[in-house]
Image (cartoon, rainbow, N blue to C red; front, top):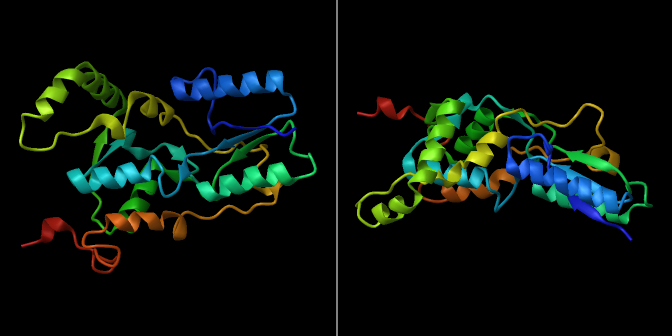
Length: 232
């Protein structure tokens, strides 16, 4: 029998993030009962229905800016979701050599959160606008949003303009992004499964063209991009 446990990169029982602690507990429980299980630990996954660049693009289009927690300096190693699926299939089809192993699946490039946001803006052809939010302030803002959750639902029906939605950054996600999450130096990776992961720029993020003003073929190009502050 083959058993594949899909966890995530950065999982740790000591993490401030409940999500990462839960993933680590899952790995521990599975390996205790099934030592021959294969554990896949993908980094932040990018794809058509991802929960990071989609949300960023939607927020940026709606509010004309993107908040950067801690200046966006945290390092991450985002991976194309199709490559993760290929790794799982490769492990299932091998001769059993992957059994009992843990694989850290990161993309070929390391980005800061700011750099990944720049790729998002470049793809949707919008001028980047950021609001730098220090980590302690971000946590206070999220806790405030949580405290007024019910009154806010009532307020949404009364005001004639959209209010910011805290779903783009919840407290657990902020805690998860507070530390760098990259593949360990001596970890088993895509290469050990015979897979070369895709770079993000290009086809893996092409789905973001749906957010371009006027449609996929429109929006400013790199050469046409003009600082909106210079508009007459």
